[in-house]
Length: 172
Image (tube, rainbow, N blue to C red; front, side, top):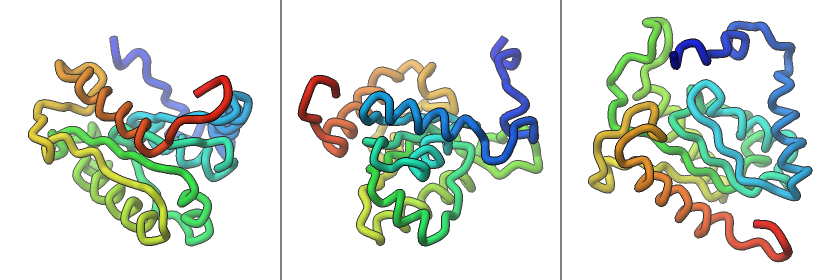
């Protein structure tokens, strides 16, 4: 049943370039007067791309086991450094990703660590939430469906409170 929900055109070239989802996400954040954008898996890097279009409308970025963390140009890093970033990975990174030609979850984790290091060295707020480092185990790629999903959600919300901060005015 989960497989039936897949959208093959996101990664198989069915959408125009640039991907209109990035602009739509960025526009939505702007219409909300700022938002924390979250992506998972195949759409995990969408918040990064949306922030590149309008960093001012993006209050924070949360990437949950993103399919990729791109190696951005210095100019793109200079834009992304303005937005706090949290990347979340589970502890089964040695599991296959589906196709033998795709990078492993461990390779994706390492690419995200490299992005975090670049953002931090440029003065940005970026970090990895790696539950095993906190003694939390049992998280799969579908973290939101795992038995401890509320514990992970609490950690993400805590990070948002600490790094995105409270907004003045009507909405958070």
